[in-house]
Structures are given as structure tokens and as C-alpha cells.
Length: 408
Image 1 (cartoon, rainbow, N blue to C red):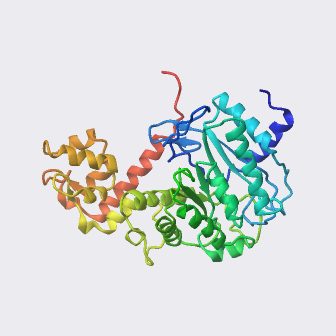
Image 2 (tube, one colour; image 1 turned 180 degrees about the vertical axis):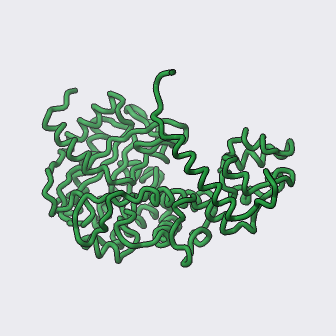
Image 3 (cartoon, one colour; image 1 turned 135 degrees about the horizontal axis):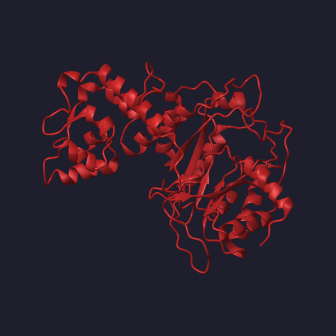
């Protein structure tokens, strides 16, 4: 199958227009196809690594970069003088099947600018995915973007065709939306999330739903962002909230004047998000009105531990599983290894290292058989913080070399 030059040009435009959408994950679904080609699996994130170490790729494109809306932060806003393009449903199918057969991709992420109306845009996306599923018998992973203000009938139809749906909240507060995206309303996104959450069919959006928030385009604190995430996780049972550092692609007096996207802040939000979803932390545990933003020099778990040093050091041979999870450098897997191993023998610092604990961080917050790793008089917040920051800086400078494919 040969892709025509005109189609390649469209692909360049519409793939570029989709690159700022971070809410694109292929994890969470398993469907073994019959009489089709392409399967889905539980693990895999677009342009990242799966839990088993595999690199997963999705074809990530827009149906069109034409849009009725004029969101200040968006490359595809209607007032921008950029090249515009639109795929036909057949063209998307042609590219997807071609790329899949060449082993370039494992699935498709399809979003779109809003053209003519929300319903018209949804109908175009549904027609495309129906062709993939029914005409081309594609059984692989498909993630689609639901268009706010579309009819429930179309949302339901799309939900039975795809593995995952996402509706982007875009900004953490309604005030931010009114300022930078006056055509959008959070209530329309909430309706989509609520509808997806309330549909209990196993075949409807089997990989669940996700959303995205842009970070740094407006003045919300990290506390505002995490409270919003916690609310959506609890109410809509989202699989993921994606945080996207604001990238200055437009000039506007309402936008912040920055040259470098706040990537460190984005990373801290993801680390805190992990604490919420897997470590039983609450937002109020790691942020408050006195400390509304994350420490950019320390990860949220280590920062929390330093502010609650009275709870440490914890004895790894006797403390509970939940207490083990509070120790910086100890993850879910390693905590389970500790629980299992200490029934057989008394754990030492050497044992912890063999279990995969990040001992360079964890050693400051634990004891083994009542012993601290050094003189207990050094168990002070200022000393520990200084060493953790120095260790992080050391790790950054030691790991900047490009890996080689060949032995030297």
C-alpha cells in the first residue's frame, strides 16, 4: 500500500497539530480479537514505556486542525494563520492500516478540531472508526477524544467502538477557562465524564477515560491542580489525569511570557498524582494553604517526609505496609517484597538494596533491626534535605550521556 504525497503532507500537518495533547494512553484494556488483526493489551503508553519495559507507539493525529474555537493557548485556534487540513475517514484508515502492517504503531489516538458543530465532528470520527473496525477489521487499540456538547447518542456510539475516551478539562479552574478559552465550559466536559462513568457495560470504553490539564498557562497553584484531580478521580473514576506543561506557541497579552515550559513542575505533579492513586495519600497530606506549590528541588514524597520527620525513621522489620509506602525510595513492589521477606529473616541494609529499594533516598528514613545507617545524631531535616538535593543533582549530571546500541 503506497501513501500519496498529498496524504503525507496532511499527515505532517495533522500529526503536528495533535502533539500537544498529552492525554493519550494505551494502558488498561485487553481484548483478544477473533477474525481481525491487532489486539490490545493492558500495558502501554504512547511515546513512552509500558510497565513491562516495552516502548508503545500510537498513531496520534487530528481528524482536522480546522476549529471554530479561538482558545488563546492552542496552536489550532481559528485566528492563527497556519496550514489547515482535513482527513477523510478512508485516509485515516489507509494510514492506520499501512503503519500497523509495517509495525510502526500498535494503535490509534484520534482527536480533532471542532468543525461546523460538535455533532458533525463526532459523526466524522465515528465514521472513521467504524470503517476501521468493520471494513478493515482492525482489532487494535483506539483512543478517541470526545467532543464537548455532542449528543449522548453519538457519545454512546463512539464509546462502543473505542477502547478509551478522553474529554479534556484543559485548565484547572472555570476562571482560567473564561480567560483563555471563552468558547469552552467545564460543565460540558463534566457531562461527558459523568455519562462515561455511569455506563456500566463492559464493552463501553473498556480501558476507561482520561483527561488533560495544561499547567502554567494560568495562575492556579499546584494545590488547585491536585484538588481538581482528586475530585475527578473520586467522582468520575478516571484512569489518568495528564498534566501538560504550557508550551508558548501563540502570542497574546493574556498568556504568560515564558521561554521554557515548566517541565519540572509537570514532573512533580505526575509524582504527586502517583501518590494519590497508589500510595493512599490525600492532597491535604502533601499540600496546604501555607505550602500551595511543590518543592521543585525535591520529589513530593521526600518533601512530605521531611515536613513530617517526627514519623520517621521507620523500622522496616516491624512497620506496617502502609508505613513502608511512606518511606521515600520504597515503592509498591519493594514494599511487598519487604513484607514477604521479613517473615523469613531479619532484613539488613544489604537486603534492601537487593530488593530494589532506592537506598540513596530511603536510608535517611528507616532503620534495620533498630540501626540507623549512620550516627543517629545526623537524623536532622536540614542535613537530610541537603544530601537529597545533592544526590538528585548528581544523578542528573551522571545520566546525561546518550546510550549506545553497540559495545564500546
